Each structure stands twice: as structure tokens, then as C-alpha cells.
Length: 499
Ligand code: UN1
Image (cartoon, rainbow, N blue to C red; front, side, top):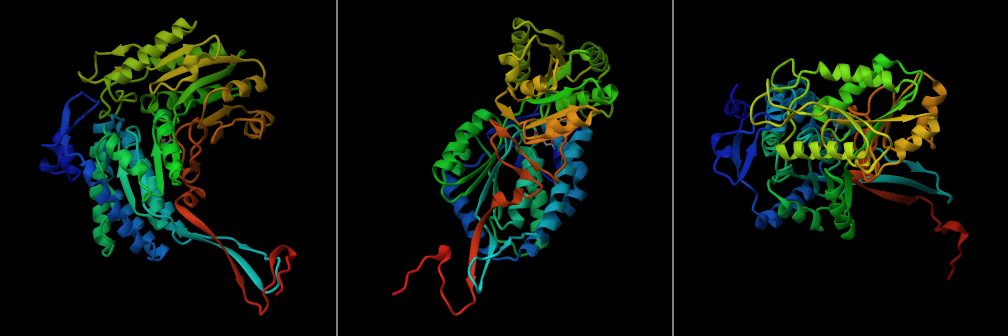
């Protein structure tokens, strides 16, 4: 299918993808596939006001009815899975199966949120006063800005949107400037769900396209109480303090520097499979990508030999072809950053396997690379830095304590894992003195999390949680209620105030 046909199949009209100011290039071949219109920063006040108007109505719609909209969204996503997945592949360069997997992640969170719409529970609390009852009520909070990155151009929006909608919050979505088309295609799907739903207020879900001026309007507006931002630590370092500074609520999902510890008892063949998927999948451009391998010294050389062999067999190329496992990087700048990181790693004493630019057997114009393995003498500055590309740094260790110390000794704290068949080691890794990350796994890699768990991490990863578990609480305000059904007015803590 041609680029144009893919966009057409996703419901985008010629008029919508031409004549604008924002050029969109496919990472597959660098071709310009669209010129989309950007939101005028001068319109942002109006857009936010519309969201507030929608909020006043949506917050009074019963949550299970709000869930019905998300149920319809899930249905529409199922029907459009192939078409939307193809746009993800075209615009983000993901291999077909990962493009489809991303849409599946959207469907999964819709299912989760539909169930949640009937489970927005608060606690009841024993009151210390006779004839009194205490409880917690969860209320909608207000418009939620969702700022997403290129690498998960639709799934992260859906995590936030499905939850925000059942929680009673309208959504304003600002996608990455690199991936507006997947956002526009997702909005088409959302609009179909809204039309079937029937009576949702205009402006309940809005899309804004453009650069920093658009983002800033959302970040700075007191009328946008929640700003959920996914992207670099640099971006989060600006957004977080600004939102907090106006007493808004930031939900930040920023950089990761995810590690795997491979212990002597590990099932090495399984570890190799886990490593290759999590280090190389999505061409190393997941925030959960495996970036650091901390292998016991007794097995390290064997593991590296197995990995370099596996890496040599990986099909690199056009992500639309069924056999391909490694698609392109998002752009040439990203490839340059990868090459610079590898040069630095070498200067720090590292031995690099692979990592070269690939130009034959791949579509011309894209940034294709061999995934790299860099054996490092120690955890250097380069290893501590997240480079959004398929580079796996390998470090050795002697004791588990040392391995955990290395794992935690980076600024980021998103995902982590251990491969071991030793129960003591596995539990120590998960204990309070173990991994300091938001995600810690045993015998699976750090990436590819299911939506049922809370997603996010500590330290420079930003501390926010999205997706499953009780992450929904981040989209609501909690109210503590004390109800007196007695004929007395006793004060708490035994205070007397008689007059
Ligand atoms: C991201 O890269 O921002 O756990 C999200 C994973 C995916 C989500 C990644 N489910 O790898």
C-alpha cells in the first residue's frame, strides 16, 4: 500500500493531510507523507474554555455511562486495528506486529476502563465519634492535558484518555510533532465512538497539533488541572515544576535506563530471548527498552557471545515486511546521537559490537542501524545517560548486592528485572533493599508491560503512574466525608467547646 492509501484507509482526507505547515516524514524512507495544519496558539484559550464547558456537563454523567463511551471506543478500535496499526508503522517506523500491538494496548486499556467505570470505590472509615460515619468520595478533577511522545504515539494517549474519561475529565491531546497523523487517525476513531454515544458535550476530547507554544498553553493554564506528559527528562524537568507551580497535578513518565541482572543460575537461553526483544524491539526506542545488562562475571562472556550471534541474525529493514524485526530509528538525528554515544563508550574503554549504519537491503532515506552491544569496564557517564537507540551496555558483577547497587546507580528509575532461578535472589531484588524502579520483574525483560499494572517510575522518570491498578486516582480528587447522624455534636480528639 502506498503512503497515501494508508492514510486514506485510516480515514484521513487529502485536505487534512496537505496544505498545512507541519511536515510529517516517514522514518521508513524519509519521504514527506503529509503537511498538516497546526493549531493556532491564539486559539488555545478557546480550546481550554471549551474543555471546561464540557467538564461541567461530563462530571455529572454517571461513571458507568461515561464507561459506555470508552466501551464504544474499544469497539471502534477493534474494527480499525489494522488501519491504525499501519499508520503507526508509517509514522513511527514500528514493525507491523508492534504497530498492531500498540493498538491492542489501546483496546486493553479501554476494557480495563469500562470495568473501572463501575469500580470507582472509596473507603468507609470508622469514626471515633458515636453516631458518625466517615467515607471517601472520588470526584472528577477537570480537563486533562495529555502530551505524548513519538515512540508510543497512540497507546499512551489511550492509557490517559480511557481513564480520564471514565473519571469524568475531558481530554486535550498534544501529540509529538513527529506523529500527528496517528493522533488524527485516532481522533477519527474517537469521533465515531462519540457519534454512537450520542450526547457527549462538544469539546470533550480535543486534539491540538503544534510545537512548544501549544504545549506551554496547556502547561501554564490554571484551567487544566492535570497535565500527563510522556517524553524526555529534559521536557519533564520543565513541565513538572510549571504545573506544580500553579498547583496543578503533573503525571510524568520520563526517561528510563532499564537494566537486567543475569545471575549464574539463570536460564541463559530464556535470558537471551528476553534480552534481544527488550534491547532491540522497537529499535531500542521504548522508554522501557533494556539498556544495561548486568551479568555475573562467571557467565558474562558466554552471554555476550550468544547475544552477538543472535544480533547477527536479526533482520533489519522495512518495518512493513513480515520478517523484519528491527525497523528504522525515528530520524537521522537519532542515528547521529546513537553513533556519538558509541564513540563516547569506546573512549571510555568500551568494546562495541555492531552499531553500524545499514544502507543496503533497507529502504533508502531511512535511518537504519545494526543494534549495538557495548561491553563496558564500568558504569560510565555514557551508560548513565539514556540514548534512545538500540545500544545495550554490558557490565559484570560478583555479588548480588553489587549488581543491585549498579542497577540503582543511575538517575532514572523506570523498569528493571532479574533472571535467576534462585528464589532468594529474586526476592532480594524485589525487596525494599532491591530495585528502586517503578517496575521490577523476574525472568522477563523490562519492556512490554501489560496495562493491568500501574506504569511509571521513580527519580528522573518523574514519579507518575498511568494505566492500570489504581492509577485512576491520579485523575480524580479525593474527598473525605464525615456524616453525623446523631443528635449530638461531639468534637474529635475529645475537644470541649461548650458555650
Ligand atoms: C513508552 O515507551 O513510553 O511497557 C511506553 C512497554 C509498553 C509501553 C511503553 N507497554 O514497553
